[in-house]
Amino acid sequence: MTAVSNIPTAYPVPLHWDGEALDIIDQRALPQAERRLRLNTCADVADAIRALAIRGAPLLGIAAAYGLVLAAREGKLAQGGALLRAARPTAVNLPRTIDRCVAVVAASTDSPEATLLAEAQRLVNVEVNASDGITRHGASLLACARTIMTVCNTGALGTGHRGTALGIIIRLAETGPVTAICCETRPLLQGARLSSWELSRHGVAATVIVDSAAAALMRTLPIDAVVVGCDRLAANGDLINKIGTYGIALAAAAHGIPFIAAVTRSSIDAATPSGDDVEIEQRDPGEVLDLVPGVAALPGVTALNPAFDVTPARLITAVVTEAGVVRHASDPRTARLSETTDRAGL
Ligand SMILES: CSC[C@@H](O)[C@@H](O)C(=O)COP(=O)(O)O
Image (cartoon, rainbow, N blue to C red; front, side, top):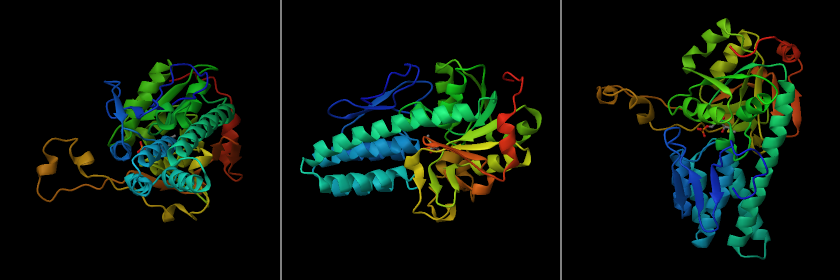
């Protein structure tokens, strides 16, 4: 990105407009390789989004804005918008950015390409400020927490700046030792691959667990809080996030562990009444079956591969946005947020 502020270089820059094309880190190759791709067309951007080379709700919005710059250059703005919109259905950032870009072009007297480039840059700055605000408010809310569970990847790779949930953990680690329990996040392992990579760049202790160990470890480890990101927050407060989040929220409630949602305002969707009204992306069954050689070839065996789930608002202790923290008034777990423990990591 062009205008990332003076944060430490340990934060990766997942995409950047090089003046002609979109230069990205191919997130599929991490952590083994820091491979970069140059996306020259809007179709390239849509493909990269579909394939999860670019991912994370705020970054999807930014990528879509640059994708539209390329579409405008190709003279195919409407087709480009449709292509990007269809790339992934669940994060509200994608359609929101496309709708806004179309409206901004309609209202501008400049060329569509120049207008969209300025709009993409504005969106980068919005997300930079969102990351700054969320991590500041979140680190203050969780000042007493030392062992924190998280899901998927919600760091710089998903936002372009400090991040949301992972950014809070990294910021908290600036004040004392912190251990991040990273759910591996099947089937594409964003937690095991990407969050552990980001945390190690910052020197923050990361413990990767299989997703199915989350509840069991809440019984046995001193987990102070769970912090997750968001692809869409519905009007009733339901949280739509990476598959597995709902189960972890249920387990956290059963164990009295605070469950915090870190949500950029760009992912809040007041026009959608509840989580039940959100389209959940269903991905290729091969992403599940191909992990075990031979399974896909067995007769009669298939897979379900929903990429996201809905966590009802009642399971969420607090929502952190760049504007501040909203606590669930009747959630007794809010008291635990101000408990000081003497536990330093595991
Ligand atoms: C700050 S990123 C927030 C969410 O987009 C994140 O929690 C998530 O679920 C990402 O899913 P992904 O499928 O990797 O795009």
